[in-house]
Length: 344
Image 1 (cartoon, rainbow, N blue to C red):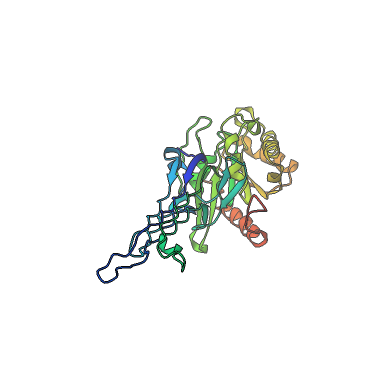
Image 2 (cartoon, rainbow, N blue to C red):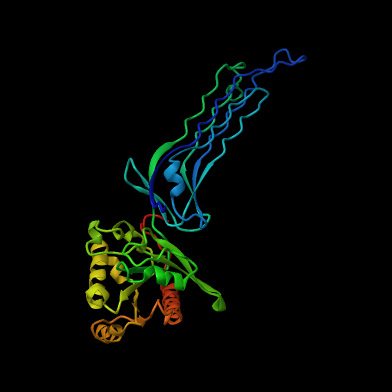
């Protein structure tokens, strides 16, 4: 199960109450106030963690509370502060305040921390209120309540390459060949039910790039048809788009029509996606119709096309090299990504 959107309720810890106490010692008959302060409540902290893949944990545990601060005690003992509640989330998580609808945080880096809600301050003990005119204060402050709220967590997968195509174009098989990921493959549409994040390794060059395999799109995906519509947001962060086409035109499909339809769906979802660099993987070149279709396709488009055959493992190494070159070119010119210019 891949969960990329959840709602959580959080409550920071309450501050501990201050203490009213007086010294009671054998040789101090007029001992003064010595009530300690209460401890501060724990914060709710979000932590970006590269080892967390999705938001499944919060689907089954949507309520989180930090520890309250301890109350103060006599003998000038302050209460212990409450422990923070650390919520680990995958990189690419966006946090939206449900009450206001505002985006309050975005976690893009490993070990990045955001204090979502602050714990309440501890109350003062009566020792704080001692003065020259009030030698025996009998008051102390209660602890302040911790902040609370309800938030929507939305994951947009961070990957350098987004793999997009129609069902049965060979996306999952290509992911198997390019990476160590093993998504389910089968000869029927919509085998892939959720995005797969995988790593393409280049051990001889000490390089690696991340690939997101998006579930197959169909016509009307931008209008909530099929499975791909709810996952289109995962390619927003991708630097390079890799469109895979069935160049053999099985099922009486025309590769050029499929290409134009894919671009239309991306444009209807977000026109910015068409500004991203893209490559085309022309799959199923082992079939005899593919060569003729490829020649006709290249005459109609101004995009780099890499012929491959997932069935016979042809052209895969060349495709890997082309992807690495495209990503490296992008790295030299890109700036750190954020959806919202108002966020750091």
